[in-house]
Figure 1 (tube, rainbow, N blue to C red):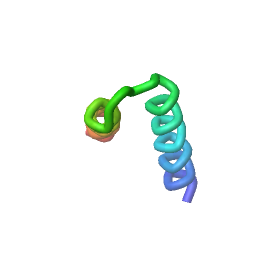
Figure 2: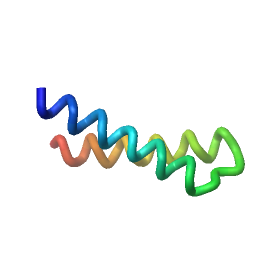
Figure 3: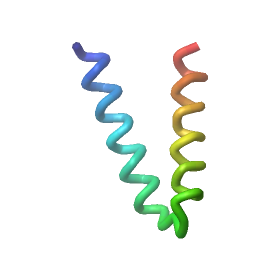
Length: 45
């Protein structure tokens, strides 16, 4: 339960940071989200 809440908080913050960075294109935002996902995968391993 705590892990789910932590992950939900992490992804919410990740999306907020991506939005605040002022990505000019959908592609740029997608790349930012992809990098965040890769960081989560690396941390999980």
